[in-house]
Image (cartoon, rainbow, N blue to C red; front, side, top):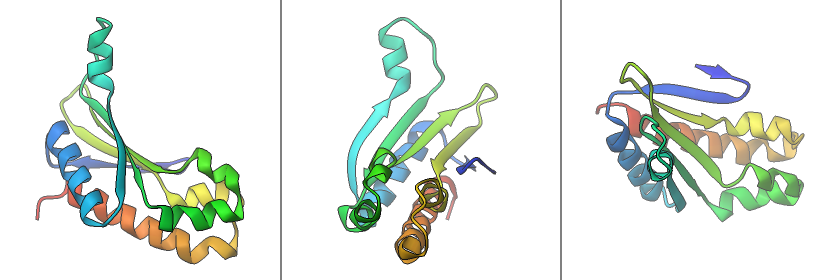
Length: 134
């Protein structure tokens, strides 16, 4: 499922396991993990309920810097982010912004095409590893 550049896929695992698998897949691809934000814990800390919801912020300077050299404003969307959330029925979903959409948003054009394609392929691969049983 994709809307306005957002790609969302259902996971075959629980929320924590999906996020753990995503983090492991990101690291295995040689990308850096900058933060893992537990929105559910933040909500609980202020007495508000929230189903499991975590955000992973990750990327690679080698992949992102060439895009920022074309237009530094894309730095607002980099590093990459992926959200894992459990819905009201207990289904778990992984969502991320498609790098091709980000490139279009920032008008990067053909000069960025190869780098963006590689970034998109890496993101699709780690998302599949996180959500799909082997």
